[in-house]
Image 1: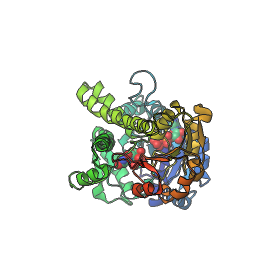
Image 2 (image 1 turned 135 degrees about the vertical axis):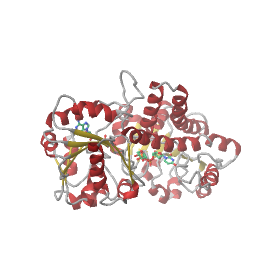
Image 3 (image 1 turned 120 degrees about the vertical axis):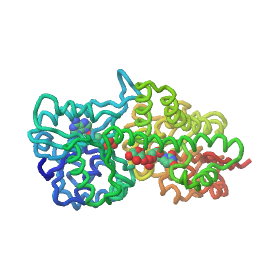
Image 4 (image 1 turned 30 degrees about the vertical axis):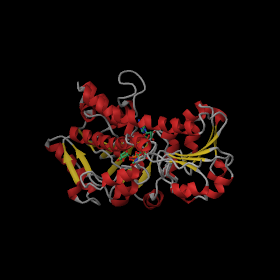
Length: 457
Ligand code: UDX
Ligand code: ADP
């Protein structure tokens, strides 16, 4: 196999874009190409204004753009030129046919594989970066290597970056996972990929293993993280009913070094493009392989997560005297978490819809996610308003429902907000992000998650 000079990434989304920017920065001797079927996305990247919001991304992009990183719509030429190809196209949950609502939709992946097959004139390494069901690499390998043509090695290299901290996660990963075949060619390909990462990641953090373990490890890591969130959330109702405080419970549990403190923040539950999709993917695999109890076990992680949103809305209805008709509710935050404009699977979507079903007038505010929010809720018409300024969003509102813990929401002048709200004013803190005692002293009726409400009689 010839030494690697040109690296291509197919798919310029949340994973592919930042990953290539960081790699290009750390590996100046390689040429990086990025392509996508979405021409607008490519133009945005190429203009230096990435189509996604990620702290620190734009600065690094400015260093590498047109130096050794290029965005091109010409996928065919890029495939011909590339020695190594990352595939990071989307693999959403299937919405049709067998496994609808659970299995991963692999149509984009397969189209990409066939395109690579059609254009490859020299041996290449193809790396699956998108999260895919176990054994996808095997299917890709067959598509790519059936019917002659140059040899193509398929590796799995799942991405563990989280949105909002993508740059830090890429620069200082806990581990880099490379799965590949136990053959001389496979080992050579794994070593070539490991050499790229070794430009900035210590060798002991680069793990190599068989492809299937690598694919499953990615699903398992996300399922474990999602399960922690559902586990802490499964205690919030109990805390509210008994007067226990979920923050203290989480602190006490997390101090056990075997458990650890992270991912124990209770609230309206997880969103984002990965957790639900990956857990359901695991459920589907367990079912398909004949392990219904294991499937049921993992499914409950998602069931609990959806219940947490419903419980939040039920609490709003019951505290607001059992009717929301024509009441103005200001929704603070719409992104699935702070520091991103991404709203995929955001709990805010379901919460908004349920509030509108109760005939509330919802006003959504968010520092980054309003364009996506408008798209997500387009069918709801004037039942939902969008307001970039949180002060104006809360004006005349009966309640504030905080759904995303943006740090700016901690710094607002809540006295000013309180004075312009309908009384009695309520604040539902779906992320336990605010100073509840202080809000209560200002005059709010405060309803946190998993702890006693602070109510003025
Ligand atoms: C996740 C994984 O962390 C990452 O490793 C993987 O590659 C992709 O999926 P991401 O979806 O970007 O990353 O965000 P993450 O920070 O994990 O948060 C996911 C959701 O869980 C958010 O909605 C967040 O608000 C919620 N969450 C997180 C909680 O509700 N409580 C917590 O304690 C932590
Ligand atoms: P992720 O979070 O996994 O990065 P995104 O949806 O943000 O997912 O990005 C996936 C990208 O892949 C999108 O920009 C989409 O346009 C692109 N894509 C999907 N199919 C193809 C394809 N066949 N060729 C090139 N790009 C593709």
